[in-house]
Image (cartoon, rainbow, N blue to C red):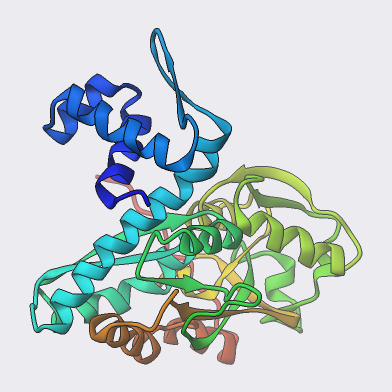
Length: 317
């Protein structure tokens, strides 16, 4: 059976691109590294890497083994960190995986509160564009826990934290924002608009496409962006409507945002691969207590129908 040290050698050789650079990185001799790697190849019954004049290339067996090697090393690291935390060591690092939109909207107040309670525990954040990528990373052992939509048939621990609502964002004086139905809008009423859309590799693009498809149309594109925060700015500047989670809308936002009729929501969960250690469980508790899926300033404007007041522009004397 391959040892963790041998797996570390394999991952480092692949990442560095050569045995020489891997030996330098690991602070071992190249003959010693080669000897251990060859012993692992004998153990698995065949070559894992092809030695090339200018680097290395994984064999089919190596490509099959590499993700498991990375997961084993990540799990060993977390096992050590978990044991230290369970033993009362107040320092360490919590690995947290999530989506970009959740990172900018849901997590800041949670992480702020967490920092107050656990100043000695660092947080390492892994951000992903799509829920599928997040689930794959968690299955491969990337982080202690994830915050996002719960993957189908997930077997680990999960805590439901609520549903985030997606809102249509427009200019403050858009006809849809000043109509009698405001602050609600039906997507078919916006079918002829050009939209502030998202890049194809963003999960927000799928959400917008599916919502419009359910409403019977495909959105025309005025501009594409990767970040929900950028989409907010483009939509409020008049490039077209966009669709974003309510929790990323900042206080005093100058544009209009409307609830969909019917509403569009996404359930969010904190989930782990195994039973959480005390620190991870405490973070899940903090997440459940302090995640603001619809911030108070957004809920208030949706409830009252208030629209932003345009300020008179000024120029220097």
